Length: 267
Ligand SMILES: NC(=O)C1=CN([C@@H]2O[C@H](COP(=O)(O)OP(=O)(O)OC[C@H]3O[C@@H](n4cnc5c(N)ncnc54)[C@H](OP(=O)(O)O)[C@@H]3O)[C@@H](O)[C@H]2O)C=CC1
Ligand SMILES: O=C(O)C1=N[C@H](C(=O)O)C[C@H](O)C1
Image (cartoon, rainbow, N blue to C red; front, side, top):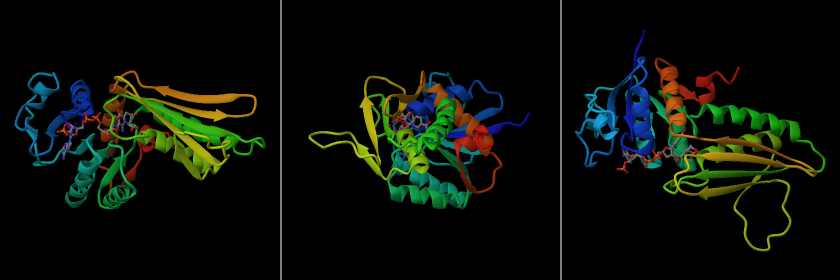
C-alpha cells in the first residue's frame, strides 16, 4: 500500500488539530510535517502533544523544510496566499481549505495553480459538496417559474469565525446565480427597503456558541418553499474530506482542482 505524506499548515488551530487526529487513524497517510508562523510560541514542540495524540515525532515548524507529498492548509487568508506562492515556486501540492479571500487574493491562488496542483474548496465536507449538486439541480429546475423564486442563504457558525458570510455560503450563492441568473448579492436587510427584488440572493450569517457549521439554501416560491440544509456534527467531516483531497492530489499535475473532483461528483 502506498503511503501519502502530509504536512499540516495551521497545525495548532481548531481544524489543524482535527486533521492531525484523523490522519493518525489512517494507515495510508503519514503526517511528516506541521507548520505555524515562525514566531509561534510552540515551534519545536511535538505537534502530537499539542493535538492530544501523544508524541508522534513531528516538531512544529515555522517553515517548510523537507516537503511532504501534499500540504493541507487551514489557516488565514494572508498566510494561505503566501503559502500558495511558495508551493508554486517549489512545485508542492496544496489542499487549500481556508476561506475569506479578497478578489485579489483569489487571483493569486488561481495563478499559483498554473504552476502546481492545488485543490481549493470552501468546504471539504462530503455532505456539503453533495448539497452543492442538489442546489445546482434545484436552481436549474426552478429558473423559469413565472411567479419568481426568491433564494436566501442562511449560515450558522461558531463565535470565533472571522469571515462572513462563510466561504461555503458564497459558493452556494455562486452556484445558484450561475443556474438562475441573479445579479445582486445582499448581506442582511434593515429598514424600509421596499419589496424584495427578484434578481437578488440574500445572505444571513449567524454566529453562535461552538456551532461547527450549518447551511440552509431557501428557494421561496408562491405557495411553497424548498430548503436544502446541511448540518455539520463535528469538524471531522471537514478534516476527513481534506485527507481524501490530499490522497487525490498526490502525484497530480499542476492545475486547480475542486472537492467535486476528489469525490468523483463531476461524473
Ligand atoms: N474548507 C473547509 O472545509 C473548512 C475551512 N475552514 C477555514 O479554515 C480556516 C481556519 O479555521 P480554524 O481552524 O477554525 O481557525 P483557527 O484560528 O483555529 O486556526 C488557524 C490557524 O492558522 C494559524 N496561522 C496563522 N498564521 C499562520 C502562518 N503565517 N503560518 C502558519 N499558520 C498560521 C493560526 O495560528 P495563530 O493562532 O498563531 O494565529 C491558527 O493556528 C478558516 O478560514 C476557516 O473558515 C474551517 C473549517 C472547514
Ligand atoms: O470557519 C469554519 O468553521 C468553517 N468555515 C468554512 C466556510 O467558511 O465555509 C467551512 C465550514 O462551514 C466551517
